[in-house]
Length: 297
Image 1: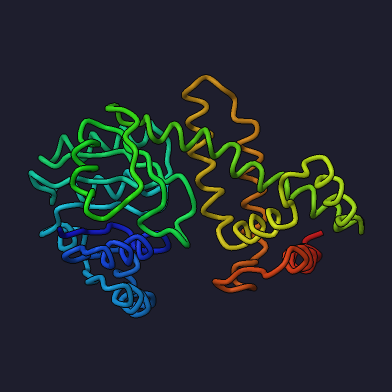
Image 2 (image 1 turned 30 degrees about the vertical axis):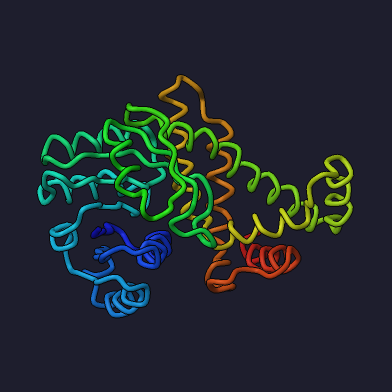
């Protein structure tokens, strides 16, 4: 089976590596970084390092593929589907992995299925891809969801069909993100404030005492590290969460606040400070926030 990736930044290479190791016939990759002379060289090396064949256009990427996987950023999901659609053909399945609102997934499905004979599937990635790769749990929705599961069966993926309507999988993901991204923002706000006052150990100890079944230091260290590396992407995702809530006639109070706090961390430049590994300890994160935020106060 041949795969094509539209968008090959963070999640794409990890999923592609897993598919190749599980027996994929080939992986072809396209990313907008390929169009920029300043980023193309590094991107080509990155794609080749996981066994993917880098190409210069979406058309070239999907030409021979059986399965097309979109792993762009959430704000570009509809753009990517619209750009790929004229080049898709009968028999192909377009898997939209992007974390965006159900409404945007519906528009992307229309773009694909009205302009091509390919079939579109709404995919919600339900956990972090690093460490799991193509085995990360995913929910699928759409008329072609069962066909996608059947096609992907040889690769041992963790797939569950939740319905035949586009948007059903994404709705679950967006509602979950209110909590998952929200708890990161809450921990960050609480512990940064406590650290600024010199009492973060006391606050963390109190939380531990109230919820003794969880290791709150480990959780805080992990989630603050994720915010340091991926705060901007998480903030953008929360825009999609807010759109989802509005479509459900709910004001996105928590989603908007979460997005603001995630973007606040992103704007501190911690990703550049820590590199791809992120902070090793909670104190590394808190100290870095204190240093980076001081000039802005």
